[in-house]
Image 1 (cartoon, rainbow, N blue to C red):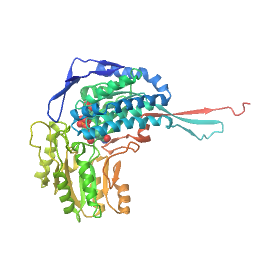
Image 2 (image 1 turned 90 degrees about the vertical axis):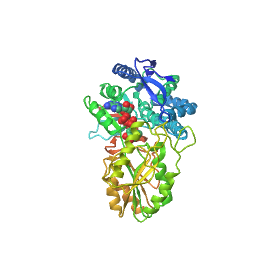
Image 3 (image 1 turned 120 degrees about the vertical axis):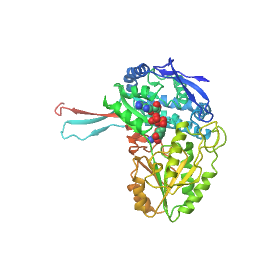
Image 4 (image 1 turned 180 degrees about the vertical axis):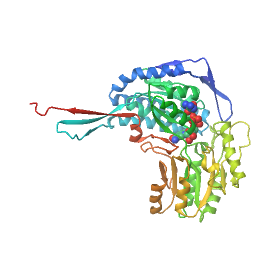
Length: 478
Ligand code: NAD
């Protein structure tokens, strides 16, 4: 049993109260973490504020050097970190290793922006003037994290914040905090200036809320659900603090009549079961052309039937859902769809075992657009399928949704692909491939899926503020 401590101003800090962390594959307690207080948050933000000035004045390349060192520490500890993630989150060990290695690569990638991000010199209307546009750090960043890719999301907040001269306070999800505490130990070994990185833990309504409400925080970078995102916006509004929100998704996958069906089946099935169906960007609903619907449904049902589900430390395709509430939410959506006329072709219920939160890979057909299973985020290995007859109809159905994160279309026709990528109103569209973003792209949700975005040079910009300087000079000076 591990007992973790928060990391504030370069010190590991105890707390009076603790929260227990559960392994979702066997429901056993695996650690106790600090139940942080408003005072802890204030101490962390103050520490981050005090050091930010000197940190921001370092040449970016020196800040980047710390990111490379952190990346190396991560690579030296892949097995420990991956085990920690699997134990608390339930993703299969192979995927946890991918997450850890990707996180190290992401640190290095963002570090490489040190010599590349730029200001501008703008043409003036006056003959004796230069207009400079500086890109400067915002100050203290707050990173509030979800549980589904807990380790990678530390990097998505921290790496662009650091290279651009911001300091940070991270708050992990109480479902999956252990990896963040292990990360803090590695950061401590790197010798960052005290206060540049801080880690606080506790309840979202207390620790998360006081971070979002703290007037010394310059940007809140949040990944999580829409309801929490709304609360964070409300808290941030009091101080007019910048928010960058990555929220939920309800990704449509359109399968046209000319699609490579086997490719579509494989990609959509993988997309639906990766991370046990708990990924914001993965296929959550399928619209298949009626001419190929029977073949597609039969093939994807068979593909889901052979998915193995069990202890994520063993050789299985899928582990458990995160907690009991997640099981109930998935079952609620399945049951309400069946009551309204949907038909289950495979799965549709919790796996019959007592030890963890396992749910069967499931397919539902005869689904209608107004059902909750088509409109709400499922966050489990359940795929509802509808049919359509024309591209116009498919695009309209895909767009009929409050979320706007990712989407996909499967077709061999370039005209259809081009129309779809202009007319599907989502931040990302994948054509003939699974939904999974590249670190050099831009991951951004439209509508209720968020504000701002992450990754690439546009994600880096989130952590910068722009200052314009007008410099007038005397042209007659000899
Ligand atoms: P969540 O919103 O319940 O919690 C996320 C974090 O917010 C946690 O650290 C929580 O403690 C904190 N929080 C909760 N209430 C708060 C408040 N009032 N003020 C401040 N912080 C608060 O989300 P979750 O269940 O951990 O994650 C799942 C959700 O995250 C899904 O909706 C998923 O789609 C979304 N997600 C989105 C992306 C993306 O890139 N768009 C990526 C991963 C997950």
